Length: 384
Image (cartoon, rainbow, N blue to C red; front, side, top):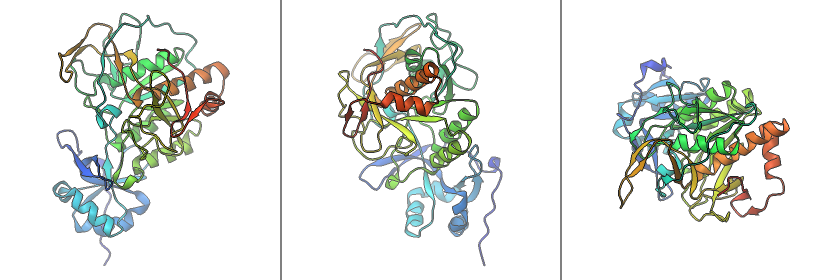
């Protein structure tokens, strides 16, 4: 008799949140990955092959919201009790389920120097009518109005970053959005909060936001986040989102940070063929040793000591006094997270200037540029 597995409404399966924490699992390559506790994912088309496994362990099935039913979440107490063991059982039995990976911002993956106060930048001056829309999928945006004109109107009720005592990821989205405005002052920037203040968000949460941003009219999506995976397999939520983008919004360009682990293993979503993966360069525009690299990287830009807008508050600095970020703050930060938005913004600027699509603008940006092995075309975008 064939075991039965019924898809239930999303509200019927408890959400896994920060109060039901992420867990660390071995990745099969001598390192570890961060995953959501108590659940696994499966493609809808593979659900029949996972049915016996799910029924045997009392798992309930729920479509992942925002991905057109293409990905299903399996959740239950058995996975909370022994996620690693059941994933191993599934792999050994050929059951096509995967861990639900977490795609943190790059600094959460590898602790490079955190943000430090920097000299204030110039007042913001918009140029042009904002014909290209760049979506920043990140930690959100600072809600405090700035006296220098930067980031005006970016925050709303759904994407506000906290201020005060700053967690590890706080200010990341505000910093990234400021980079976009510095490079493309004519672009319309929209902030989507897909990561918590500690800098982590699940693949499914980010993937659904990619579709939402494109549906809202974004031309370029910037993802300054990424993850390794168990067995280096592509995360299926990101995979489904990219499929849907290709079908619904074929001209939308996704730009993603390559990661800060100093290796050539794929970092997802950057490593997908249809994503523009951006590695990091030093202040002198030479390859950064700490940056990820490989044949999957399309290009690279400066990623060390980048200066941009930040949030007001206090942040602990290892081995030193807490850093204080006052009114209208700017910061200096290092990571491929801050190379990617330079490329996203340069593409947007090209779209506005030449009236071309994002993909055409990217091709022009890369044409004739010098290359470095594993770092792709090396770009000089944001001035020191």
